Length: 177
Figure 1 (tube, one colour):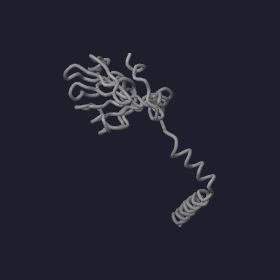
Figure 2 (cartoon, one colour):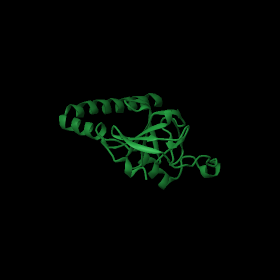
Figure 3 (tube, one colour):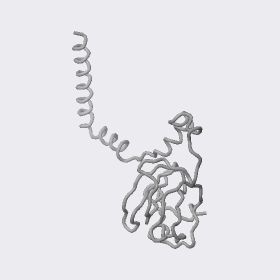
Figure 4 (cartoon, helix red, strand yellow):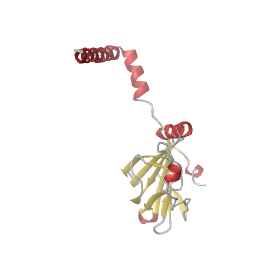
């Protein structure tokens, strides 16, 4: 008898919430407010992870004890650079291992126009860094990566870099010091 009462009560709450949502979204002002807050804003997962780690620590307790010693810790070195589309084209040494420029979250792995095989990493400042023309990729989608970790290798010893924030391209010279 008690189960039926709890089930019925839960069903009534669900019905009220669904119908209440439907009624409020009929109102254009409420609907536009909901759309602007949910669909038109972006969420920086890198910022969320940084805040989480600052206040609550790492997700895995005692990770610093368990974590293996870093094997790869390089900074980006290139022979020459030239402007390419909205970014920069770098000429690298043969079979050069590409380091990641900033901490962040991998938000895209795939092919992009004029960049070939590409990895996009969003850093905690909301800057999306496009690494294009890659061969071997050492990261997976939604991995949290650290500065100077191994990203992969470049195809034909050429790396394309592009920096974007809020749909605006940024000057690559700021990021390649």
